[in-house]
Amino acid sequence: MKTVARVLLIAGAMLGLGLAQAQAQAGSTRIEIGYIPILASTPLFVMAAEGWAKDEGLDLNLTKFEAGTAAIQALAAGKIDAIYAGIGPVLVARGAGVGVSVVANSAVEELALVTRGELAGFARKQASRDAIIAFADAKGRKVRIATQPPGSVPDTVLRHWLTKVAAIPADKVELVSMGIEKTQQALLANAIDAAMIREPSITILRDHDPDAAVLALGGEMFPDQPGTVVAFRDAFIKANRDAVARLVRLQVKAVALIQADSQRAAKDAYEFIGKGLLELSTLERAMVSPSSKFVADPHAIVEATRKMQAFQGELGIAGSAVPAEQGFDFSFYDGAR
Image (cartoon, rainbow, N blue to C red):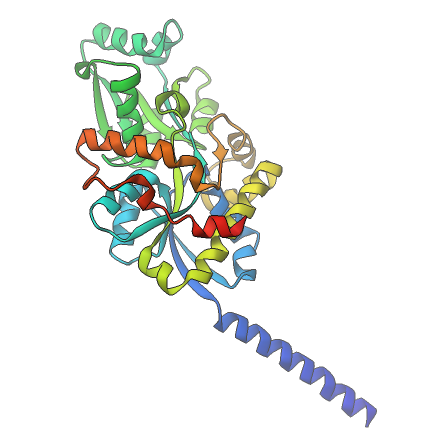
């Protein structure tokens, strides 16, 4: 009888465990998240790879996009619930009436304008502005710079540097819009002269070509440059506030892990943006480069966001004049501290 009782006790415990697991699964919230395959999206990769999201009852389904503009279009159409992408497209969409809000930050000053080949040679002898002008004059053509589509952070930051900081004449440069992967390929193939890229592309390029040169870092082109943010559809926020709060808490936790253990974070990111394409050591070095600055606090980018939005207004791509702070919902981050 004792044996039978013990079997029943174990069976009951296992049944209870099974019911608990089933309840946890039934209570999980599915979140469709779009991301750009760059190192600035690492907090998302960390919470997925470490199993934190699953432990918090979040079922994350990740979709890769080549540019923030494409991601925001998918979000506006209701195909995804959230994005890890540049703040530029979010502000443009918000200004156009799309219900989307930034709930956390991910990285700042993540961009760099880089070059290789002949232009790099010019840049080693003089200031970047002078190098671009001298190269254009020597070649009798415009310097071709690859960036992402108008409205994106890379395009906005580049235009800000060209016009407001370096004051390079418009007839000296030609901007070419293309996706992230195509930009890297074009630069490696010498099909363009320079490009706006982020990590890990910067480290990959410098490994491939030690003579490659950085013409300008993100902070030089646009001081305190807001970069990748975490944004949700307002409709999803309204229906799933607790799930959004849990993800923001994980965002804060993931940024802390990246700052404390960059190698562990690189290993997590490797599963999403590097496996089979590059060495883990490349991501480890990219994680500590000058262009890898992880910050979860959305308050930290408000003023720079105002300035970026104002500049986009000058370019005619900002939509209606919505104050930058209206694009943020700080309640989740403030509640996570």
